[in-house]
Length: 228
Image (cartoon, rainbow, N blue to C red; front, side, top):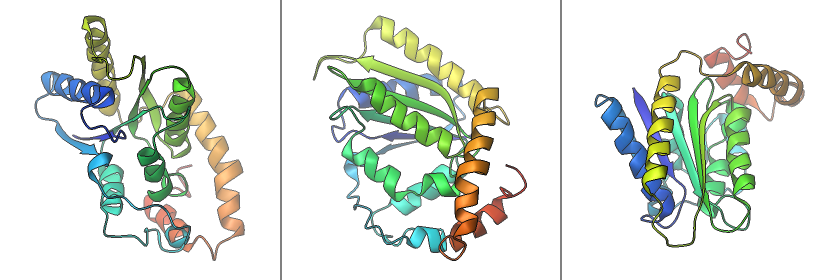
């Protein structure tokens, strides 16, 4: 099974990265056969979305030399994804926001039926808002928020104590069980996905077919017209 871990912090060895490495180690301890790829967005020279709308027309981003298009494909072919971000100005980091803008998640339903794990750190306030942004991204893209971890800590402090290690190990086990399910979505997530797709996304796309040719082609290929 393939799991992608995405560190949305520009501080590679910061609290968010510490937590993710602990999650990775916990997953390997549970199942050493897992194929886990750890990706630091802070190591990538990612470019801002330029609003060209090429992804709507072709199903692919027009920017092809910074690695995000390849990452988009890896996420689509993975079995589970761990998304993480520190909280900056009561929201996700700039690195994570560019990931959201560039990987055309929602219309292409990139996370369809995938188990996802959201990890957010914060120091003062706003962590819940950043967590909500990631969770809405997952659900609006057809995925399941199978686990979530929100940790408040002082800036630059050691992120993980014994209590937190126990919680991370417990969540890692829960996440892996969800990854191995054919459909990890809860009943609530299945209902809300149908509503958001059939009432919000799909009618809008069909009203603007010429603009969304690439999206419609992707839906047809993946059976999303039938499997709503």
